[in-house]
Length: 114
Image 1 (tube, one colour):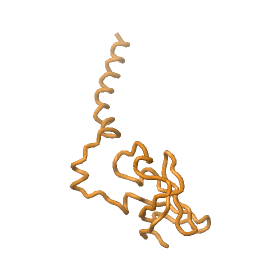
Image 2 (cartoon, rainbow, N blue to C red; image 1 turned 45 degrees about the vertical axis):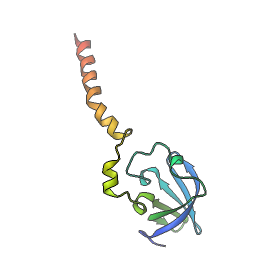
Image 3 (cartoon, rainbow, N blue to C red; image 1 turned 90 degrees about the horizontal axis):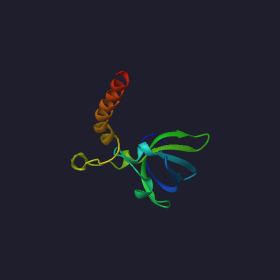
Image 4 (cartoon, rainbow, N blue to C red; image 1 turned 120 degrees about the horizontal axis):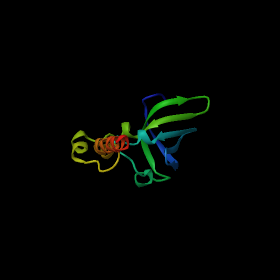
């Protein structure tokens, strides 16, 4: 096994920050940022313990037999589909609300000065 290999792992645990897997005599982590380029509100809605998933190896720690893995690199979303899917929550919602929040904060500061 080497970096950039595509392998199949079995999910052994799910936490809010990522997914734990096993492959041969290695344990691995798929960090939540490596699951999807889209906002992931709940990992359990995508994957389950016991599932087998295809992943790309990002890093290998041979001493501790640990892997850093990417699900999204092994399972890319076609760009046409990605453009068609609107993100309703996550960063885009925050980025749209930010100018409004800044304006309200400026108004409060001006009111306190008066």
